[in-house]
Structure formats: C-alpha cells, structure tokens
Image (cartoon, rainbow, N blue to C red; front, top):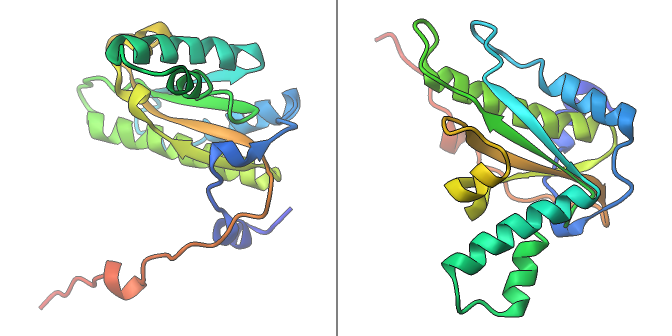
Amino acid sequence: MPDALDLLKTRRSVKPIELTGPSPDAGELETLLTVASRVPDHGKLAPWRFIVFEGPAREAAGEVIAKRFAAQHPEATGDQLGFERNRLARAPLVIAVVSRAAPHVKIPEWEQQLSAGAAAMTLVMAAHALGFAASWITEWYAYDREVLDALGLKAHERMAGFVHIGRARKPPEERDRPRLADIVTRYSAS
C-alpha cells in the first residue's frame, strides 16, 4: 500500500471507458463506502448518501438515461442511444454520491454540499488506495430531474457525481497541473 503522500501524488483520473474488471469485491466495496463516509460533516448530518450500481443494475440505469435522452432528442440515432444506454456500464462499478443538503438552523447548505464533494473525492482516493482506478464525473444526466427521480433521488437531493471504479486498462498518463505560482497567493497583514 502506498504511503499517504505517495497516494495523493499518484492519483489520476481514468476515463470510465478505460476501466475494466474485476470490480471491488463485497469487502472492498464496504471499505470504500466506510472510508467515504468519514469526511468532515459539521453537525453530523450525513448530508450525502450513496447509490451503488453494479452488475445488471448498471444496464437498468442506462435504460433510464437512454429513454430520457430519446425523449429530448427524437432524432437520435441507434448509435447515440446505445452510447447513452452504456453510460453506467463503462466501468465495472459505479457509485453515485447524492447530496442531501437542506436548510438547517446552524449548518449552511454550502457546507453540506462541500461535505458531499469530500465524500466523492474520498471515495476516489480510497479506490486508489485499494489498487483500483476511478473517475468522478457528472454528465448531463446528473442534472436532469427526470433521470434523478427515476434513479430514486428525492426532490431536494442533487447528484454530486458518479464515481466509476475499476482497473485501468493501461497506466494513466500524467497531465499538466497548475503551477503553484499561478494559484497561490499570500495574504499580507500590511
């Protein structure tokens, strides 16, 4: 297992189409979800939850996505509908992170949303720590209310993202990262 800093330095997103099996087993999945639920959570609200898509459930969810796409794009070709149908079947495991942020007397909704984002990123890092590759993405269907309703989200819930998990078909390539000089400033008391 890589040490913590090496783990953070070596994480790379891998496109879902470049992921293959085997997917995490039941014990590894429980570890992933347990670790992802250990994020900062002001007020202990658990303002997020997870939906696991594995096996045939990935294809069933893809049918929901393709049906909605077809309704929005009646001119869509069979290839386009097939692409949409395959959205959650590209990786062996997909875990949706759902934000349950809601008005609270003490905890701002923004903090709750950030906690959901932290859960998604921690899920990605936990996958990397277990030797898997992952990609946290949102695509059009993450913002489509009809798709979200069909996937079981409640009216106040939003999709923080879909984390696709599997094994990388090839080593991920490094990409350019921002230079610290371009993104870091120092506050001055004077």
